[in-house]
Image (tube, rainbow, N blue to C red):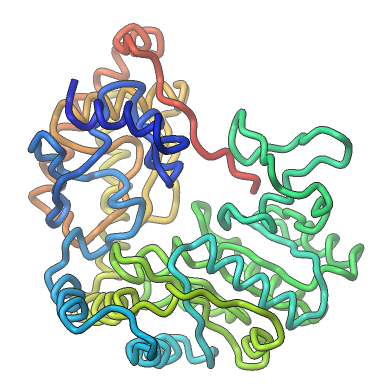
Length: 434
């Protein structure tokens, strides 16, 4: 047993679920044998506790590191901050400098507030938007974290909890009194949102991802913006995942549609904890009429890392590069799978590339791919979150390893893959509401 596997078994006795992040649970990758813990990182390389080196051609820190791991300019800035001091009774000037930079990148916005994780910055945005609109209900589309306002959409109207964000996991602990306060609508379904707004005057917030996989249909984002204006609702674009993966700023800048608020996380600090909500002054000032406050939102490392990361993204043209790399990966996946007689269905946000193999059990394919890629020295599966550390030579190495695995999948079929996985399949992860 590897040190990582052994420690993971112990962790589940001390930490409910083993990890603070669902997506990092070892069982979601492999039922047995996943390294689970890292010792150090560099570029797209990860060394586990046994000193084994892997190339991360999977989630790259769950989407946080488009500059690659341990980027020297970002880490150097953080080290200087540590030497000077991270937190004191006085405020850190970097938070003001970062606010200026974010407003410069988003000319429609005037003001900024910070947090340290995506779920909490989404909760902050909802609180501000409710305060500004004076209405309590939220129409939402996409994934926005773990807080009560969002999980309330899973509450049934009777004594049972009949909706699930995660398979087999009920949102226990969410007050049933919140049922009906968050109302989901489907991406690219403008008529569905129009019906919600027409039938419920208490909806004062529209909260949505600009794109998760499928691109917005022509006129969809523009139509959402128009409906928000017509109904005097606050429009929030959640760019915690999509931000900085095509343009230096939010993906909404590429599509040319302006929200009232936008949230950012993941890539903003290139692995350091910093998230932000940016917005129009008339909406953001509503934060003064409610209570939103936390000591560690004022620590210095987060904004320092974000400033350095933004500089590096601009200097190295990172957003455009990861978008182009993702497009190339999607094309090469199709070619490689086609050579083995397989066809793929692709996720269409290139920098967060994903696929499923048509005609095969997705969970079985994911487990087999992950297991075989691990044997070849890669952390991976049917996903590749692009970074500028994924250089052409490393990309060639990845496809040299992947192409024969596609051939194995075609030859084995589902039953053969199942027989080749004595520990069974990985656990399923998110089953998205929208």
